[in-house]
Amino acid sequence: MKSMLWAIAVMVETFVGPAYASSWRCKHATSCDEAVREWCGGYADADRDNDGIPCENVCKSREQVNTAKKRGACG
Image (cartoon, rainbow, N blue to C red; front, top):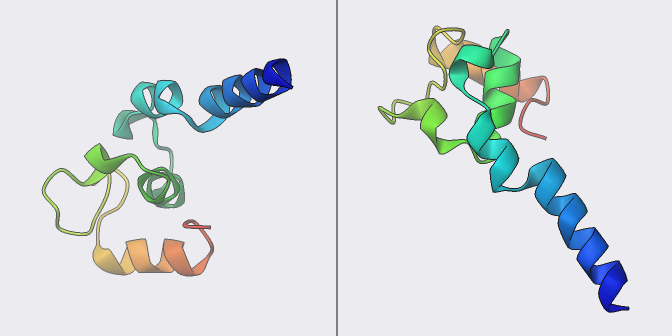
């Protein structure tokens, strides 16, 4: 039982844990949808100035962010 729980913990860490979050940066975003998805997924540095627009290199307006959210970028 312990080994199964450990394996699950390792999988979670691998796919959604801090190691993944710390390796992704706004410069990797190829679209606003991708940036919003990462931001909603916990990458708080995407919106360092707290204006509601993550990764301003690809998201140019709050309207664009809201459109990405409507398309399901936040889950």
